[in-house]
Structures are given as C-alpha cells and as structure tokens.
Image 1 (spheres, rainbow, N blue to C red):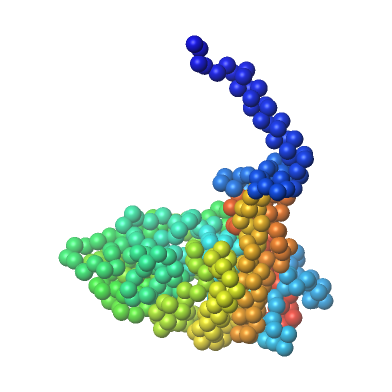
Image 2 (cartoon, rainbow, N blue to C red):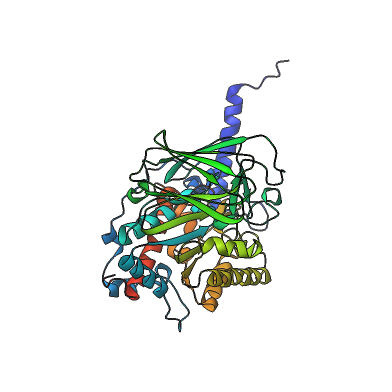
Length: 476
C-alpha cells in the first residue's frame, strides 16, 4: 500500500483549515468564543507587526543635524506645552533649573568646564538619546567631544569607535554578582575594567594592554572633535607606564604612581586626531573607570548607561568613593532616566511604593554629592507585553510612573513623563505598528534610532522651556 500523502490532499487540508479559521474570525471578531477559553486570531493581528516580536529592528538612517530653532520658540508657547511635554515640579516648587543657569553663566563669564551627567538603563545605551542632548548643550552653550567612555563597553558607541586588547575584563555593580568587585568602587559609571583580575596578587611578569579610539563619522558634529583626553582610574598597586599615540605618532610617555584612591591623567591636544591609541605596561592593572574626550572649555555631556539597572544601585556602591568621583569636576545637571526595568517586576502597590522610596533615596544622595547641580528624573516610556495575540501596556506601569513623580516632587527635583509624552496607554504599540519606519523595536520596549531621536527631542523641548523660564534666554 502506498502510504505517501499526495501533495494535492495536503494542500486541500491546509486550505480547509484556513477557511475554517477565517470563518471563525468573521463570526467572533473579538478573538474569543463565548463560553469557552478558546482564542482565535483577530483580523487586525494579520496586518500589523505584532507577530514579529522576535525579529531585528530594521536599520534606519540617523539624522545627526540639530537645528536649535526647531527647539526654541516664544516663551509663552513653551510655557503652554502639555504636561507630558514639559518638566513637572511640585506646584509650590519654583526652583526649576536655576542652579544650572548659574553654572552656565559662570562658564560663559569665566571659562572652564561643566558636566551634564545622563544616567539611565539600556534605553540610553550606546549613546542613544544622550548624543542628541549633548549636541544641544554644546551647540547652545559651547563645548565639544563625546565625553566619558567605558574602557570596555557593552555595545558599540554611536559617537566614538572603540577597539581594545582581548585581556580586558569588565566589572559592573549593576550586573550579576559574578561581575562585581569587593571594594564596590567603580568610578562614576558604576562599571570599570582591568587587564589583570581584580583579585589577582601582583606578579613578577610585565603585562600589556591597549585601547584605540576613532571619532565616528556618523556622530553629531560637536562630538567629532575633542582637545582633551582624561583617563580616570583607581586602586593601582604598582607603577604603570602609559604611552599615548595620536595618528600612530607617539605623543607622550608617562608613569602613573600607585594609588589607593581615585586619580586621573590628562593629555591636551592641538587638534583632533583620526586615531588615539593608549598602551599600558606594568605589573598590575588599575581599576580603569573610563576615558573622557572633551574640549578645553564648555559643556560635556556624559552617557552613563547601566544595562538592566532600575536606578537604585547608587546607594549600595561605596558612597564615599562615588561621591569623590562625582566631585572631581563641576556638575550642573544630573538626568536620571530609570524605571523601565522595575515595571515588569513590581507585582503590587506595596512593591511599587518600595521602589518609589528607593528612588527618593538615590535622589537625596545625588543632592548630597552634587549640591550645586539640578536633578531631573526621567520616567519610563510605555512598555508592552504580549497578551494573547496582541500587545498591551504593563499593568503597573502607570503606578510606577506615579511613584517616581511622587519621589521627584517630594525631593524637590523635576520630572519628565516619557510615558505621557509618547501618548499614554498603548502608545508603544502605536510607535511599533502604526509608524513607518517604526519608532520602537519588535520587543515593544526599546526605541529605534528614530524613536530615540523623537523622545530626545521631547526632553530637549522640556529643558529649553524650563531654561527660558529660569532666564537663560537673557545674555549669559
């Protein structure tokens, strides 16, 4: 007997199943059959990208031109921005960004430098959003350079190309316990790298490592040039020889001395090289906290991305060390963009309230560490999870948003509501499915480059409105 199934029979069988499902979809457009737990697809799900949640985000060209006129405008018009498009403060709080305004005036009057620190989770990783904020501050108030860089980043950086020898190991306080060090000292990024293990005794063999950096051709214009390089480090147990090459030409050879605290080494250049190479040679590696590429004056904006962090890790690091790292240069503004990693894990209001109190503690610590800086808490975007055959906003997202806003108001800092800016409940699904090209990826959580630009522009308009309200439109 021939046991093979004829192709025509298989085709008819599949066609019959498709017709049956189609009839069910017509009869029950809501996707459910009353009185049963049986669920069927909806017609709308066949015509959206909801079924592509596992696919990659399609490459998109990135617009790296910022026209300040697009952000500026009549002060009354900026004041009338919807609540989700401006910085929010407790109604009786008139502090705004006045500390930042004073700092910007000092830089304009006396020269010198000022840092803006943008902390966040993976939503800002790789210089997403921060690159736009940096271009705004440097174009508006002066400055250059892509600012601080991890020695060993998680992902490629939008504004600077990295290459490193293979013997570097990354340590993070916001990662798994296996990636942490007992000292809890990581510099301002919450991460550092070493080319010898952190728990390894000093040996007798000379060890070598290297790093290379190239300005990115796709970066915003002000990030493509720099005149000052600063290597930040700590816990160096033996002298270390450091050679810096600019365009393959030896620029200088220096020896770093042992230190148990925080130190840095700075090189000044007359022009921006096509390539920077730094070579290290010694018996021990320092804790390499990062390398900054800046101008000799003006504003630097640091992208400090903490993958997987909920924003509550600062209080559990070595507080004295972290405060000293923050205090090495003047800081005018601290942006804390967190909350998204807490949303899937807080299951009830008690957990939400605990998270809000933890964020309030972090704000108070930053106020102690940087008393002359303004702080803005940037809340999470809309985030969706798959429910049956569609994507819906996480049920506790608005509760998390409210807890963060409450913490910001109680601690006297600003709040930017990314969730409201996007359009509230279900907006992430619209950003994925109803915009071409999409503004967010198929995970329904992270922005695409165009989405990051759109969200960044929303934050910039809110900052610009507040700065004008606090008098920055007057001559600095």
